[in-house]
Image: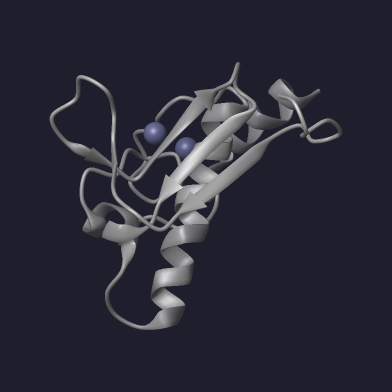
Length: 111
Ligand SMILES: [Zn+2]
Ligand SMILES: [Zn+2]
């Protein structure tokens, strides 16, 4: 990507709603744009509650999209940050970290 040399991955946090082309539902984020270098996180639906909760939600979604951009798929563990969030409750349920399985996979992908 022009102008972004020296960076492996860029996550843009956008203060708006996001939809995937052709999709009916909103998304919290997308990865794998620009050959996997760029990911987007949309914050409009992450709002509500305490500021700290809002920031934690953004962190989770950034980690989720970064995970995708490094090659991780969705995880079946509801506590894992790679679990697919369909609702804000899903996001709140999961932790801001990768489960053991995803972490091991991420390590091997980054090697
Ligand atoms: Zn995902
Ligand atoms: Zn996982």
